[in-house]
Image: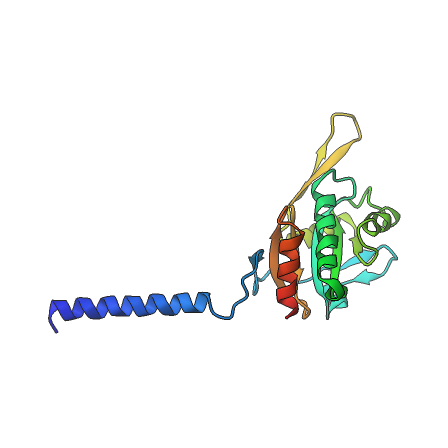
Length: 199
């Protein structure tokens, strides 16, 4: 085989390989607006307590799409914005919104008592579930989800805020983590992703 034929075969092979790779990327795989983390080996489960004192795990919500967010009730902007967008996304789904479960995990268990958490999530959607635990339980859950949080002391003695990751995790109806939704993506984008997962 001469050099010309060899070069032509090589180019053809590269072209076919590229086309197959492109087809694999653009086939039947859903085109999510969020980051697709399907198959990840983290964010697998949690073991925390709800505001009524009941132990909760991810499997309790099987059959529903779960949108899970770590935050705290005294958060001035990120947390209320995220919870509002989740509530709006659920409404945008119409009747299918009943298949979406919002879950809020506090990173500030000292101030976020069950009563405070219950009132907080009810402001956004009465169906949302708030979870809390000991410092050790919260730390273990955050580690499992690769979520960062840290107490930051305020200028006045005894006051503080919490720095924390500002994204949500979306699980499918089988309880598998599927999406990582960045803060500020908007209710419409989240609703579109949830609609794809409901199909």
